[in-house]
Image (cartoon, rainbow, N blue to C red; front, side, top):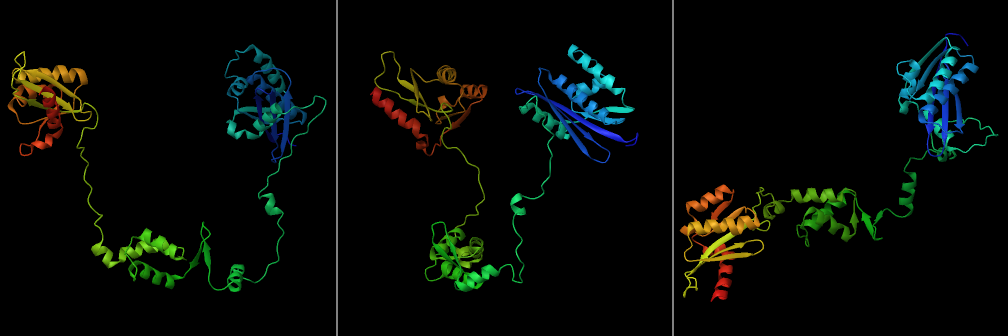
Length: 387
């Protein structure tokens, strides 16, 4: 060994619920690895375990007369404390640092470097193994010898067969020759399907699709029919789809499925109390005891809930006040209100209320009053009750 030869030391410690362990790996300039591991049979912190691992590795290097050493560890605290860049605040670590500084006098050149944990796997594995294993104090366990297998053990046990001059498909050819020239494919339901070549497949496509019993079905259904007839080939489904696309009669008389899309419009109320219909019933004869002869009625299109009120005359102010008090304050602001073309339901005051609360006001068609059918049905029920 020459004095200027540089060795490498990787150390790591492991502390868990089972126990504490340390591991170190010395790597020679030639790439030889020397493994060291030890189980700590006393209580210690994570940082104390890291220091113990570093001290064990330094002592092993001193025993081998190493003078130039590069030390690598995945503990940021230990590395920077040994460099002198960080202070030691834990009293338990002060004596550890003194021990390390005393060992550094045995080296001519030594450096401490931080290494991520994923690059320090060997030392980490040794430390974890030492912390998990239950070793006898009087028995020394030698380090593990690790090998690398590049192939599964089952492949290594297969004896090499004698090579012959037959092609790779010789067994398949023998099977076909001994059992006839027709191949069959077994389905999941144990039904055998006859395998056909390209020439037979073309004839089958023509007969099934547009033959005597052909119904010009689509490609997927056509493939299912061919399998029910007992035939099979590898590209059957794709060939059926392509054949139907090229069929002239299917293109002329088939359904026009390529229609441009159009947006969907909700015809009914999507949720409760979002769309109301309103109408006026009257005049009612004879008058009520309080002189009222008109009934103002609103109905929710989703729940068919009805709110009514009687008036002497259904004025625009009465309608506006009813909407605010009985609808908006009780059920929240609706999205839409539908009414007929009556003047008292389409005044400026009604429009101002709708603009104030962001409500859409629509009128039913004057040419087809039945379009507001929910309101008409509610009117009939109210007339039966009153009448």
